[in-house]
Length: 140
Image (cartoon, rainbow, N blue to C red; front, side, top):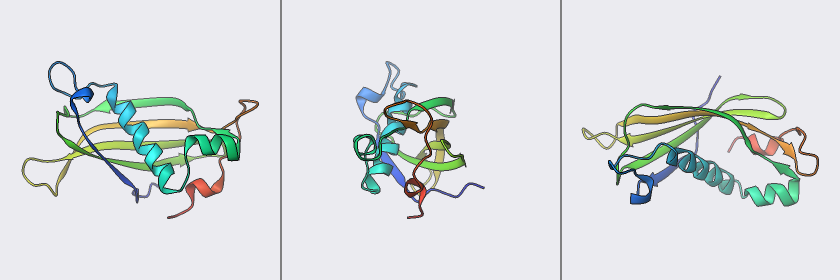
């Protein structure tokens, strides 16, 4: 069962995020979702470098699936949500969505893009799977 995220990251779409037509360039969603995960770690007083140096773990993306629902545009304010859909000892599947306020009301959000990202936990020295620390997923 997936629980709604208690962490929402907001991102204003800037010129560098867009293509020649003024839409968010598809690869930029990966950057935006990565920033969201980095901010999620920061809220826990963690960072990728701290996980490497203090806990001896890496968390690379192993696989991802992405869907584009509507075009995002310059100056959109995106709300990025993340939900853990599945977790095993050394792998986690995170659903991330990018939504924006609709033109009708700023309270209603419409889905722009979504991704299912599989992240693995690896030992820094051996690059072999290692169990995720429980504190990463402790309730806020």
